[in-house]
Image 1: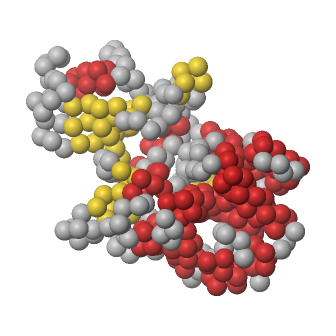
Image 2 (image 1 turned 90 degrees about the horizontal axis):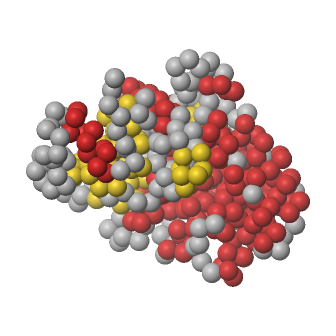
Length: 375
């Protein structure tokens, strides 16, 4: 019988690594003579560690327990990590998205090193210690170029992985069984709770209910392509090296919310967070570069139309209205303005006011690229 290890502690993971490497138990220590295991902060769902080996190399281990790391009373199905391993295995086998990047991209999906399914222990490369949200203000980082690179890469993911199934062993490849239903349910959270944000800031909650019914409900049946599922700057690790061929390396991590769905939600979520960064961290042009590059990458391959743009705009507005009420970006007055902007976009969509939508904070700087989609 395989020995049980407690992967919710640094000592438990270290003991497992000692066993796997046939190191006498107890001889390893958190210094350079053995495995150095550091639990990383920032996540709420999983136990995540950076492990440095005696030779100085480092990698990341993630463990999914049947509850949230941040709240053990909250049950959370650890099958979520099976889906992360499933897509990383698929991307590793195909060389990850490349149909639009010609292998020149500085962006890649985090590389899978191993997965212990029974123990829900994922071993992946170490993509660096800082993410794009944190690095946004660093002067040496070319933010417009980063936006362009990420847009081209995620467009390649959406176009190149249209037929990939997420079905796990023993599951049918149907959307109802072979999709990541945990991700689908969690992705609707902002739609289900939009009414609370609107009520808090003085708007009609019936608008929120209508948006949830008309657009939130579609998340259950969307089946265009593989979506990352949590595509935002916090899940893009940044590594700078001015002496390298590629002075910046961007690693896309945290794939456990991967699902089959509509590419509009990946784009809408990233665009929402890019808008917030531009608005509150210095206006460096991430939103404009990202949206322009995305439409440019897809227009001659698998172009999108008005329905897609409406879904993207709705998702952007729902995100900007809801999440800043949960994660502070500004003061109450500033949050009020964000909710007001979002409500305006949602009203424009429902009224089919395309001129108003093109003049909105979402599209006004990319109007030339997106206006033809609404014609």
